[in-house]
Amino acid sequence: MTHFPDAARRATEALRDLFPPTPLQRNEHLSQRYGADIWLKREDLTPVRSYKLRGAFNAMRKVRVTDPQQRTFVCASAGNHAQGVAFACRHFGVSGTIFMPVTTPQQKIDKTLAFGGQNVRIELIGDYFDQTLAAAQSFCRETNAHFLSPFDDADVIEGQASVGVEILEQLQEPPDLVILPVGGGGLSAGVTSYLREVAPCVDFRFVEPLGGASLMAALRAGGPVKLARVNSFVDGAAVARLGDLTFQRLGWASRDQVLLAPEDRICVTMLEMLNVEGIVLEPAGALSVDVLPELAGEIRGKCVVCVTSGGNFDFERLPEVKERAQRYSGLKKYFILRMPQRPGALREFLSMLGPDDDIARFEYLKKSARNFGSVLIGIETRHAENFRTFTERMDAADLAYRDITTDEALAEFLI
Image (tube, rainbow, N blue to C red; front, side, top):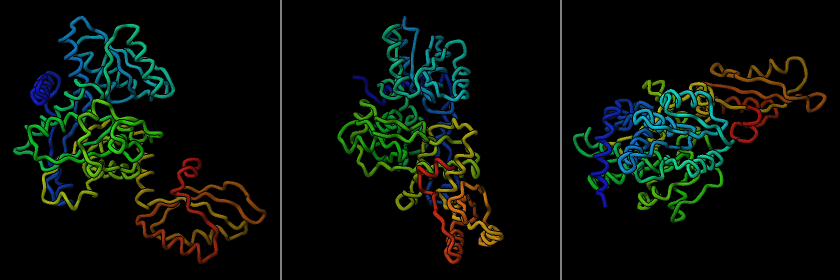
């Protein structure tokens, strides 16, 4: 059996045909905030802006060695894995068929075609990923093509381990802690398998989106289980079921080592990294940084590496990210008001607003009674505590209102 660290180092060496090691950058802003030595492993700076290229390339490289006649590869993905496979297909001069859901944004389709050039074609099948995956696997059986799994593949895991190889090469000594995002588990399985053998002193934390905690579910159940529901906002890590092979390499982890990141809080982290550091991260790419406040007490004085796994962020989503960040931070709220239908009522209401409050949405929904009307209002403010003063003024005026900011179903329908 091949020694995993040796295989990971060979995969890392082979990757140098594609791109140099991604930067490992000390982040002064985060280091000062937490009193620690915090480094960012910038996987958002690979040629395809995510680590996925590593595993796709390594798996394709090894297939080409063991079966030189195999020139057709297939994957099912609407994101970073598709782009990594496309890039690798063009590098090796082989054909790739990439299955994507019909609902895939055109921007992602165009980027995948740009990386693959004439070597790839896109098949849009299925409204949901499960349908897309089934079509891809059926195509493989019919054409004898090789299916490239996004994470549940030994060679993919080995390729992702190159992130760990580079971290040790770039630091003078092993870090105290490595924080890894988790989706299907390929990255975390590879990096931990390597570091646990060659640098057993390193500790780990795993971060999952709250709405896609497949590793936590697997650790609780003693094996991979399918989540009944997945929040797709953190699309790079929103995986319903951890891989079988990845769990074999992650089953040692304790539940205390797994942290869950609320989707709205991730938006706050994304905006901070963009506005303060000029670093563009996709939701999954921000996971490792997002949990630093939870770890503040235990990382002080330590060397910490956060793997920023990807930066494929569509800026058309920026208004949504800002909206969610403001709501999570308490800087924006939505109310439904029962407004008296008489002259001066609106002016009286507006007088309740403070100097830092701004109306972002104002809409009459319907007249619920002859003398009252229902109003949807969105208010932004500079400091979250301003809302306490605002609601106290509404209470004092006997104004009937309902805060719907955290009412997920109602807010999603109206906002």
